[in-house]
Length: 389
Image 1 (cartoon, rainbow, N blue to C red):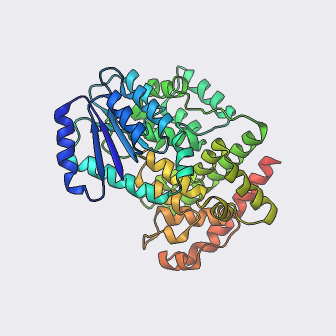
Image 2: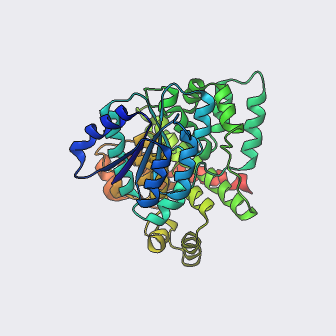
Image 3: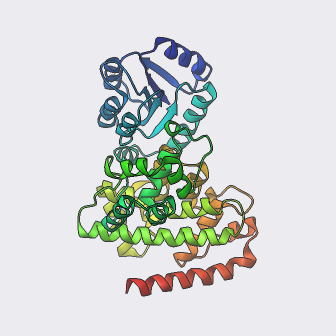
């Protein structure tokens, strides 16, 4: 894996080279002391990860990462934040996929790079990685945009009011958690709870995210709007059922979020609107095969893997990333107990009218509860049908 560090502090670059020297067998590290030199390296070599400082002479981090996004969209883009203004950080949000506090420890850098390598393994198709790399936001339905704008502008609005709107939209949940868990906003405890994220960020920052950085992606075409609405409504059911299945166990909130975000890969592919994605959807409609099966056959990957890669690149909690990656693949659920990935996988199968993996059900020991969960899934599906009608 090739990594490029860009910073105009020579001592920092020397420290990074020393830190990563012992990993030279698996990570090829390059450094550049100026953005101009870094752009020259990008023209000569492909990189998997590009990490730069926020403030540099001649070009700031946001401007530099815009160039990286154009030249090598499949590279993971990370920005160092030190004493940076909120305005500067918000400008970097559309292009920076993760934030690192500065200074940070050697262990933090090594952990981040190792996790990035795992993400590359989840999604090994360069074409799809490139499509995902171009995304700074996911699409959402205009109705949600209008409602959240109204709520935020109300002087009496509280965090709970904002959270109730955001929780209905996977795209906004993903972006808000990305920002709340980033190093810039100095949250050392990872959160999967939207209301906590709203409280931590504050309504002013949430408003800035919505209005200034256009978190709400605009989806063009009636077909796409309808498709996005269907995805969001289904994901809400998956998250709700997965959370109910967890009961009072730790991870209930994370199960809700993982279910809500389980099909963000479909949203990403809807935006990319590539020919292979169109072919996979057409084949599923024609043959009756499940969409993730036709995706695998046509594209070599699935929306589950695309979604996991995107959320992982955004720095969301690992439990959510793992659950999204596994929601169509029981073999990816590695925990021997009933935890979030298993809950999301089983909830998704039941709501899709499918039989969950018998091996998984037996392994996590929930066979006695399956009929109750299936009945609940059927009632939720029926209720959704009545609402749509």
